[in-house]
Amino acid sequence: MAKNNDNYYWKDSNKVNDAELLQVFPEAEQIIPILIDELNQKQKSLNEIIEDQLAVIDKDADEMSRWFWRRWLAVNEIDELSVINRRIARLKRQLRIAQGLPLPKGALSDDLIAAAKEVPIKTYLDRPFKRSGSTLTGLCPFHEERTPSFHIYPDQNRGWCFGCNEGGDVIFIAMKLNSCGFKEAVLMLSGGGNE
Image (tube, rainbow, N blue to C red; front, top):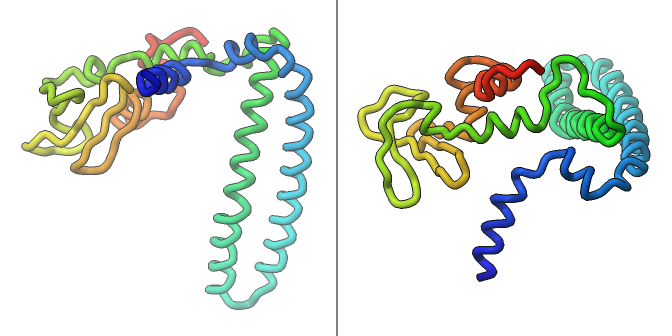
């Protein structure tokens, strides 16, 4: 029984959006600005560290050393800065929702993204698939092949090709097949909403 509850939790928890979280935790409206301030301070500090390290790296006359230390900096500091920037953006979006402010023009709502993710991959790909246990198997949409290597996991609405090692959710697949960005794929899958 516990195993079934765990499966239900993981399936159900993926469908909770920011607006629903903020309804459950209304006190977040007071906490979010504090978190944003803390992350802004971390961001400022990390930017200063990166600038200082770049100044030291650029003084080095050896081109190979400059290349190496810039790569090291990208892996160790710039990736962390990118994570901080994404967290700040999400917290700002949550704060707008908590305050009842509209999304900025052109922003995608959680409901629109959720609607796009609900489009079944099998329906989107519109090609023959054969049931194999709990998965569906068919030809990969990403590369030419004669033996099916693309598997769809309907309970998760995800697909994976074991031939080319590509796959993901329906949004990723739409992005890959149409050579478009996240926003375009979401709008295409959700019927081109007016957001």
